[in-house]
Every structure is written in structure tokens, then in C-alpha cells.
Length: 82
Image 1 (cartoon, one colour):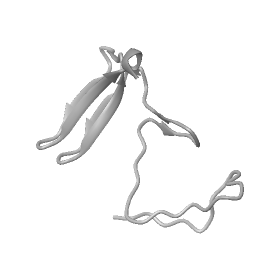
Image 2: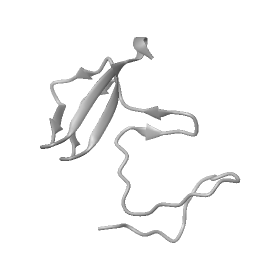
Image 3: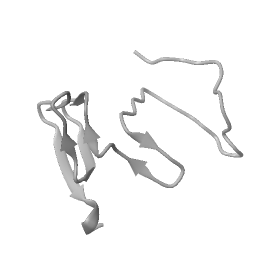
């Protein structure tokens, strides 16, 4: 179910923010970078039938988990190789 908002707080600069469909960000998205946590310390899910690229190394803490849905493709790319 999409979530609609009538306001965006913070600064958007001169750009345009347009969202169609749904968006869920577990890591973060910056103007020049896509990021993910290097430590997973809470339950994390990659939905079924999604492709995902994570930057590693990644540490999985005892309080965290990584569940990969059916049909999902996940690659962890070491930052040393980028």
C-alpha cells in the first residue's frame, strides 16, 4: 500500500523529488552514494524476487539476522574490489 505525504521536511535544494509506487530504505541514499550498514544488528529482510547488492565486509551480530526471500538474488561486493 503506498504512503502519501503532503510535505517533505528538510532541504531538497533545486532538485525534484518524485516517488511512484513504494520505497523502503534500510541503508541510506545520499546525493552521491548508495550505502548499507557494515554491521547488521537487527532483523533484516531482502524481499522475494528482489535483486540486491550489498557492500562488504558485513558483520552479523547475535541480535541481527539476514533473511533472503525466495527468488531473490544477493551479491556482497567487497569495497576493496570497487
